[in-house]
Image (tube, rainbow over the protein chains, first blue to last red):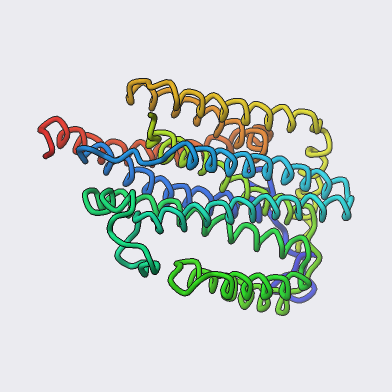
Length: 264
Length: 112
């Protein structure tokens, strides 16, 4: 029941201004602000493209097929997410957990495919000065000229897709916490170790894997300080975040990949 | 958690129970079909501006489907719908006003 500053006096609350519970309004406000972050990145990419002569169109069929499969995974994950929300309102805990896990698998598949594509592009010379050079790669790769002649392209490409990949990773962790609660912490630590040890030291993902360690620490603090059983409202709020990640990709995919396809 | 929030959560959950699962599959199918159309158009060698217009049009329809059905905004009260959508669209319009005339001017003057 409601707590009050005065002992023995019941608090009185006004009805919700937005006709829904406060957690959901909070998530919507966060998503609105986050949409401006992605809006700024997409505008930066588009601005660079318009104002730069000879903007490269380097993506072969293989990259387009890969990005299309990634899109299919993300769209399917949105379907499994709404089914998880539906299971949660029907109070079907088993189905809720299974659909959440299916969503996480789709999200993880998206991230892995994206990571593989980044690795391939970096090996072919599309890189940033901050990325360590992979052994055996030189300045003769297919994309080396692209990185040299239009440095804005790799900067905006890695910035935009990297930010999105980070959001997907955070989303998978978020859903893992909602689905498995404390049981997810050891899973997260194993994923961190695998991601860290399985990637070579020159890969950006070798360092990015520590995001999972940081997530494990933050989730541990939250789950131990405020343990709770997540109900349908928590699943719905997590779903809002996940659908937003999907929504953003619906603009990144055509703008970054399809508009930069190399048609022979 | 206070009783008001619990009551609102239960009301929202009750709204969800009335939505048929089939509509989610229809929306998912429509999203996949539109994605397939986008990929098909990529290989049609269309002029970039025409291509961009079609792709952004399809992306906006996909975004509307995701926000309306998957994110459930279609079923929220109109105050929630208008405040959220108008605020984000206003910000994006402001960005467009500030960024693109300059980018267009650069390309019109000619970039070497």
